[in-house]
Length: 352
Length: 135
Image (tube, rainbow over all chains, first blue to last red; front, side, top):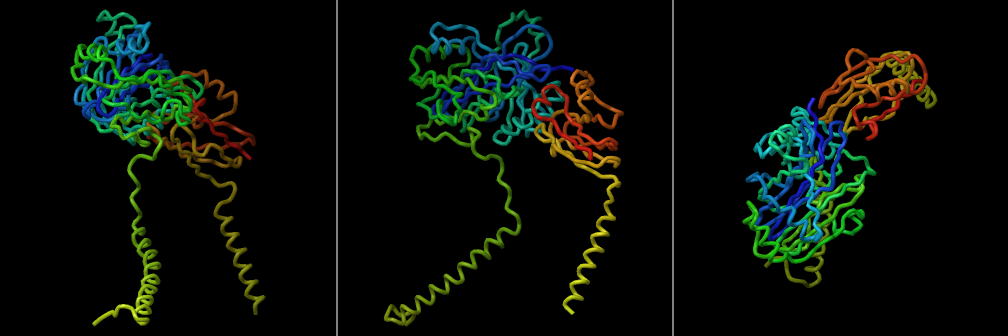
C-alpha cells in the first residue's frame, strides 16, 4: 500500500493590498506519523488575489510522499513557482541566510477534483469536498491519514471546502536527477476576499506535546492585523512576530524578477511570523486583515463557530409569535388605556 | 374509599413493573451501539452481564479506517505488535472501513474488565480505547 510520508516545507505567500495569506501542509508518514521539518511559507495578497508559494523538498528514498493543504478558495492557476523567491525572503529576515527550506507535503483527499497539475515529480490535485469526502478520497489514492485527520479535515472543510493534495513521487524525482534537498516550488493564485494561513494543519498527526515549527512570510499592501496576534494569550505563546516592516524596494525588485512574480506591487509590508508551539496548543489558524480596518476574522482564525447555521425548527416562528403576542397584547392594551386616559384628562382628542 | 383507590394504584404499578421486568430478563440478548467519531469510541465505558449474548453495533463515522478489538491485556499486547491489516472471522476483532458499520455478537462468561482498542498506528495513543466491565 502506498503511504505518504514526507518531511516537506511549505512556503506560501500572500501579498496584497489587504492581507497576505499562506499555509503550510500537513505531512503524513507511512505509519501515520508526521515528520515535518521546519516549514516556511510565503503568502502574498494583492488586489483580492492570494499568491501562495510553497515548496516540496525531495527527501531521498523511494515511493510516494504527500500532504494536504487547506486553501481559502479555488485557485485560478497552479504553476511551478519561482526558483528563489522563498530563499530570498529567508535571506531578507535572516541575513546569514541558511538556504535550506523545507517542502510541505500534501496528501490527496477524496471529493470533486477541480484541477490536476504535474510539476516535475509532484502531482497536485485541487479538491472540493467536506472533511469525510476528502478523507475517503485520500484513502482511495493511497494516503494514510493519522487519527486526528477526521476532526482536522472538518475544521477546515466547514470554512473552506477547498484543499490541495500534493503527491511527491520520489522515484520519479530520482529519475529526473533531483538531489536530496532539491525543492519543487509551487505557486497558486487564489482569488479570495478572506486570506488566511492554515496553521493547525501543521500539527496533523503529531502528539499533543510534539513541537511544531514554521516560518510564515506575509507580504501585504499595508501593515496587517493578525489574529491571534503573535505573543498574545490567544496564541498560547506559540507565535512570535519576528519581522514587521515596510518591504525594501530592493527586496520587491528582487522578488518581482523571479519567474511568475510580476504581480509584486511597488510597495508592500513584509511580516514574518515564527511558529514554535506544542501541537496540542496549535488549534487555530492565522487570520489576516490588511485592509487597515484592523479586524481580522475570528472565523478565519478558527475561533468562532463556523459552518452553516442550523435551520430553525418549524415551530419556532409560531412560538416566537406567541411570545411576542403575549407581550404585545398587554403592552398594546396599556398604551391604549394610557392614550384614553390622556385624552380624558385634556389631551389631544382622538377624533374630530 | 381513598384507601381502596391507593391500593388499586399500587397493585397496578406492581403489575406493570413485573411486565417490564419480564420483557428484559437479565439473560436475554442485548444490543449495544458503539459509534466511532473523530477517532474516539462513544461510549468509551460499558457494563454488561456475563452469560448474555451481546450484539455490538459498530458505526464508523470517520473517513478513515478503524478497528474494534476487544480482549484482555495479553490480547492487546499481541495486537500492538501485529501486522494484520484486516481482521475477519473472529467476533472480537472487527475491521471498520471508512463510514462503514458492522455487527458482532459476543458472550462474556467471566466477570472482569476488558478493553476495546483500535490498534492502527497512533490510534490507541490518540484515545481510541474503551473499557468493558463484565459483571
